[in-house]
Image 1 (cartoon, rainbow, N blue to C red):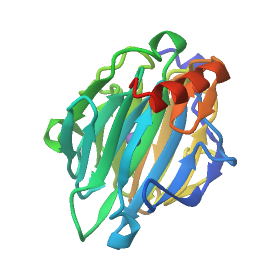
Image 2: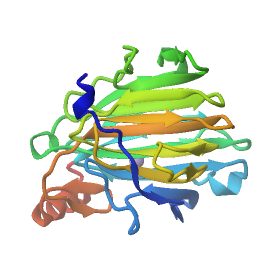
Image 3: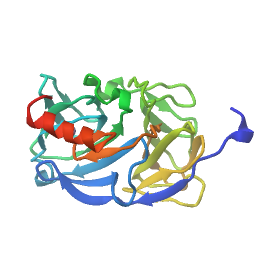
Length: 283
Ligand code: MN
């Protein structure tokens, strides 16, 4: 890497998210895809959920469709069962990830596989370009044991779900559409983490524990999202206390976005078509 042309990304916007509910009354915080933050092309939405009160999650997300993008579910705690109209079914457990390319469309449910205890995790939506929006639906699913963990010299770990670290640890998710990076990073006090994030990626961090400072004096507290500005890498120095955060980015698509509920296409006509196809059982 040529250091003279290397720019560390700063935080250009941060937000504590928007308390809301979705599905059948599931409490969550929408972090990206809100009026405040908007989308971070091609990252459409990030929902964070986490509660040990069953009434916050027991209703789950009964049957609903998706078309035109990918959904990524990463569980920090608990178990979630998914089941689609093509017969695909499975359970995402603590530390596991499901990467679903909805493509031309699926109808599925996502329901807690538990009646008590902590359920916590994230759902990310990543857009697809026009030439992939009507592709065949596809799944990539990895239990925690299939997600590599890199140990950092200064103290800490990186769970690599997608992308490659600067030290060459490669996540199991294959994606040659938007080349995403999805990492769960824990730093001991005083530790440093440097990661290339290509200049053509949109990206953000979500802070799980502690406060994350990218060296720009804009510390992002736990439970907040920080949108990355321009540059080609991030440089995080944990201060006096340990931190844990997600680093998520993907290659920007730069196409018109028409968003209608569970459908994300390029034009309103395509959104109308999606609703029509769904109503007439063509998913
Ligand atoms: Mn869904």
